[in-house]
Structures are given as C-alpha cells and as structure tokens.
Amino acid sequence: MAIASNDDLGNPSQIYASTDSGTTWTQIGAPGNPWKGVTLSANGGNLVAVASDSTVGILQFPIPSLPPKPSPQLSISASDGSLGVSWLVPSTRFVLQQTFDLGSTNWTDVPTPPTLNLTNLHHQVAVSPSPDRQFYRLRQK
Image (tube, rainbow, N blue to C red):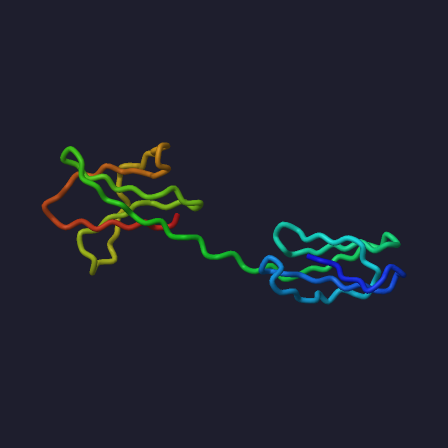
C-alpha cells in the first residue's frame, strides 16, 4: 500500500496497492482526501486510511474464497505380518472404510479405531491381510 500526493497543501492524495511487491501499482477507488496513513487488514479485506484532519476512511474489498481443503491420501505399509493404513491428520474428520469389490456400493467402516502417531501426525490402523482383495477409502464424517 502507498499514498501518492503532489503537494503538502492538503490537496487530495491517491492510495495505490501492489500485489507483486511493488513492481506494478493500481490506484484504489478511495475518495480524494489528504491521506497521510494507510494500512490493510491481514486478510486483505479492509483498507483503513487516515487523513491529515483525522478523517478515517474504510474500504472493504471482496475477500477471495479459500482454496478447497486438500483430501488426505491413504498410505499402506506391510510390517510383521500385518498391514498399516495411515493418513495425515486433516482438519475435518474421516472414517476409514473397506470393501472387497470396487463395483459394489457396500463400503463398511473398519471396526478398529485409528490411533494418532504424534511423530508424523498420521492416523494409523492395523488391518489383517487377507487372501482376497481389499480396498480402502476415507469417508468424511
């Protein structure tokens, strides 16, 4: 954020913003006033400017929508005759489900609750290997 003024006689100054570290500048649609200070909120949604006569101007901008939350990915590892299914702790809750047929809509919750591994922040479930194919997925709870 920057303020540009042609003189110190109280003539209106303009407020400019840059989103590329000052390489390019865009004039903000603030009313003409002898602005002396300007700041932007952390989320970029509110601009507050103070004029030399202590007038405070507040401009609100649309806040861009947040990117979608990433979906956790399952990891499967074999150790000591069992399989370990794990996933990174997400900000939303998931339940681990299993099926033996991908063509089926019959997914069931894995009966063993996950444990939290604090060293890698993964939920982990130990499952018994089966001679049949097993498929796993996470369903948002």
